[in-house]
Image 1 (cartoon, rainbow over the protein chains, first blue to last red):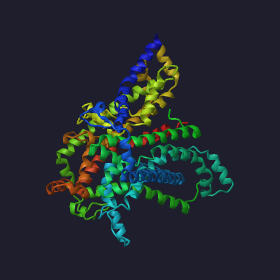
Image 2: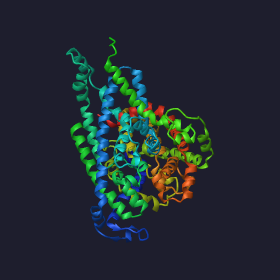
Image 3: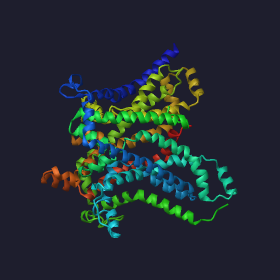
Image 4: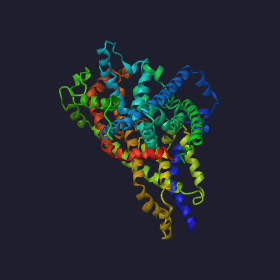
Length: 296
Length: 293
């Protein structure tokens, strides 16, 4: 009897949250039916005409599709790979710093950009990269030609990758710094007795020590390979750089919510959701298998 | 044994300085611009120190009704949104932290949560659901779709799992209901974890702009980030192609470089206020959440 009441309590506690999840996460999943329809708001989802895979055929035929997929992949992979390298290198430098006060101050400062919104950072970026901005002044000082970086197809992707790496490197380094502090200090003492210098200790003790963490984080990032960073790009791109900067998410927004092609927007979104889902499942399975990582 | 400072130490120190400087540079530059006069800012004469120091951008900003309204809209959104987030997170994490033997249907709920983490209907269906519920142009469109921060529920659930069973059993023997146990034992004991989660939620709500953009139409209901975003995007020269000359003039008058910079700086203030707390809890929080052994 007592147990029954307890169970009832548990269900009741979960009820409000579950209602919210079902309405705002599960029901929209049902909305993917629209991807196979020619959805018209007046007719609603029940009475709109089914057109099979026409929307998906259109994705394959559209000349922009390839470019958008390519932009998405190259920006996302760039962010993942470079982001990891910079975070690890920064963590190593931090770990080698022996002035504790200095280390703390640096850490406090580098986390900051992570907590600022892309709206704010986009304003700062456009100041810095503008025609009369700091970057162009440095470039002209060294005899280069000034350039409108944020509207240049040559530079846009690099700035997006660089900007994202810059925003998150301090924050991403936290996990590597934590992994380094858990390395057995006697290893370093043994290394010292064997005459290993600083570089050798990094190469043979620190790096192998954090390798499992690096592999784990990279695996988990696999699921993000189609997330090129909507908020960042949306706040900095313009029609002039659609060619290099348009990604799946920005395209879905413009097609689906600006041009009101609901069905087509849903179809493109579904394409992304399915691939991301597969990648996420694979990533979590790999992580669980090789490094005992479980979120549950 | 104190070692001598070597060349390597100095190089490392310089590198770390550059890393930290790169993170502060854009902010310092923006602060300097916000305190400079319009012409110097537009000509790019401002670096890290205001040129022709003046407060006109800030004065103008505090006379702009829209900015003040949006600022308080955002504050209200954070308070309401974070309260809902915290309440639902705590209520959900507790039953889910129970062993399947104790809570029989746990698995079904877990599956729903895993599915929502792994798969999404996408932007358009979510938008249509919010629209069809009649939430458009209300604060609810900003706080309800993200009412359950799934990742935080998992984080807190894992934290609750580590709470010693004996505490709970003792209370249960005394006849406490699960709700009382949660409120009197689990919540007080998990203050650091709850603080971490609350900070995640505050930053998330304060920084969100896109939901405001698609769900809110009335200017008086716009959250701050959405409002700032609309200003800066409209100032972008490539976007002026489709505007009438009057519209462009109006935009220019409303948003100059110094003016926008001042708005950006003021919109950062709440984040800077909670930043010390972030430092205190966040760092521990993500390490615990991310590398659970």
